[in-house]
Image 1 (cartoon, rainbow, N blue to C red):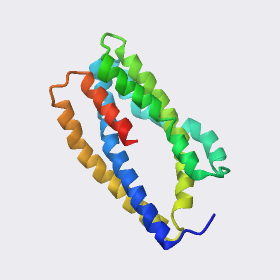
Image 2 (spheres, rainbow, N blue to C red):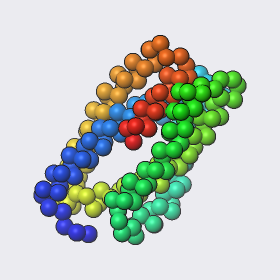
Image 3 (cartoon, rainbow, N blue to C red):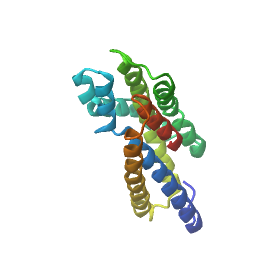
Length: 192
């Protein structure tokens, strides 16, 4: 691993804080414990489906990591790889946002459209995590990595806090259901 200079450390910290803030803001529109179960319930999904998203999420994210953790350690151009890996999560979120913001399906099986996107999004995140972890290993000096990650994740929390107000604003707006959730997913897509 090439040595990271102090200047690079500070530059990378600023970029990572911006990324984490944006991700935190966006994830407020797609939380596993509130937004997704609420959305599925309002779409008419069976209660077992609505309540099982957190458990399913753990499986979806873990499964691809079995493979990408091995591959991620041998990547030569880690910057390109981490950006490319994000492309696995973008299409499902865009599709969910587009479908529900513009087409706005309703009916007893409308939830299946979103649930399918959710499954592919979870698998995409499972692909990203090991490559992103390897990227962070190359981005910050070993001595400052822990402190810098703590600072970055604090910005993620700040973004999520502010994003929560944006979510409330959209859900309380005149945008009808399910379009309000669709626009939230598109905002999340933009934040990724």
